[in-house]
Image 1 (spheres, helix red, strand yellow):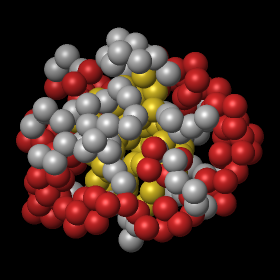
Image 2 (tube, helix red, strand yellow):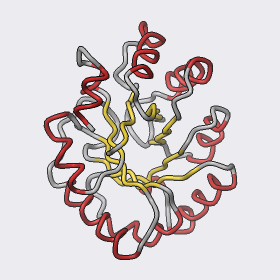
Image 3 (tube, one colour):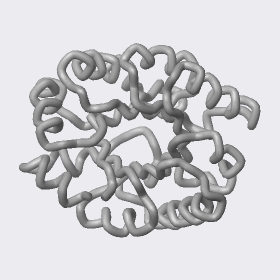
Image 4 (tube, one colour):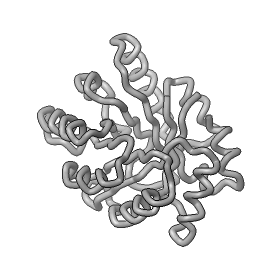
Length: 218
């Protein structure tokens, strides 16, 4: 069975404490923290996500799944280490070259955190094959990063299958996480393609029963 990482991006800030309690009760496996810098993507959510992480640090034991959609990766890694995230994922496209990718992977590991690498919809999955032996997770974006509520791009599901085939062929040990436009109606296809973790925000937060929606997504 897959895990569910609930994105708080579209949560109502006025009700965030209640939402966190309700999602923990609904048995979300992770809280997905969408960190944006206004440079790598248009939106800037850094201050908001820090605020949410402060709340989570005090009231929840659910592990944090931090997704950095930022250009200055190391500085943002440092900002979120205090919250002891389960994993920190950065974008391949935010790095200038192979050496920088390796440097970031090493940096996050040296800080005692699990590390993930993410690719945008238009990035060929083959571009990150050389890094797969070094990471704990690969995050496949099925929408353009930067905002919630988008429709999943169908062609991106092929990338999940390719990634799973590569993992199986080489006996690599990483999870496949999928983020963007995921809802109950398409979750089975994504799971069948090879996903281990589904990121969902709008689909859960706009539903009447978080627990029921999470069970259906799984």
